[in-house]
Length: 397
Ligand SMILES: [Zn+2]
Image 1 (cartoon, rainbow, N blue to C red):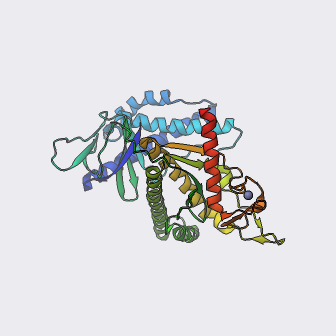
Image 2 (cartoon, rainbow, N blue to C red; image 1 turned 90 degrees about the vertical axis):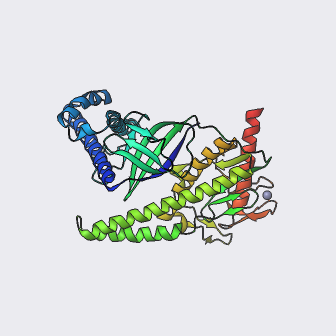
Image 3 (cartoon, helix red, strand yellow; image 1 turned 45 degrees about the vertical axis):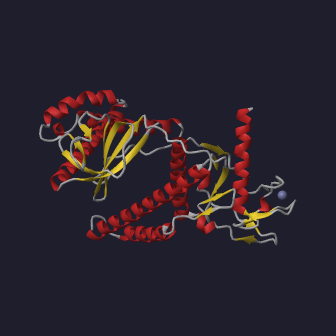
């Protein structure tokens, strides 16, 4: 199987300057190639292809011996391919009848990744294997950079990327043939419900909370973005505010990853089979429907929590979580089943009666037919588990 590793880089001052120059030259290459495609498309209706642009690389390098020629030919090709993918996505959206924005020029600070498509070609992982204590990665034009390697790398290194995040630098390895490490069987299965009040609830009634400071940070983010909108373009205060917004985003991302890892690890360790709802991105960001309270009025339905930024931050968290869960499940030899989420929250897990008013509040489920009372998320998780097992049985039969 395939997996990627991210390690912090420890460049020297000199190397840091070279890395920044490397990113900037790749950015210029990207923008130049974009300009070329734009002009050809707008003025003559001609679509320039990756092959045309890649063929020009040789002369671009020859004309710029102290600039573009310093870097790896292959990483430059990878940058042109990245632009090619942006265009492919653009045309796909047009064909789907939408009106996408034209691929954009990358401003300073908006181009933070360069990829070397093959280990050994302009880059080398573990470039000083005889060093007694440290690991190094070498990039053409930059040199051997020290890596903070906090875990062992297994499999074969395929692609190597450099990533800048604020003032920090990372190396990302994408490895093939990483051996799976199956976990011992537990003979247990679970269904999980992903929600707003609780990040994850299992069909056995275990709740896992959202990352503790996530929503507080969401609030701070709203404040920072508002204040950013009031700052004058190009002003020093605006720059400061941009950095603040980026720092909050970074913190939210790290919290999300950290809690997703922990939650996924626990589930994969404890269960052989895990059933979850298939994420439906378009639907999820829709506002929550009010819940009738049975006395002709409407009870609070968590609409405030579900709307706007909080909601979108939670949405992104579920996507990240499921990606990590699927990865860990595959590596551990566990079975992961996705089911259609329709009606899972309004169906009684005991008798199967399905009605909107079964759910009396955000937290409580009470069946109108059999009187079954349960935590609404646990009830939903039990329905999810049942749907998953039914699906599994249908496949096996
Ligand atoms: Zn019932």
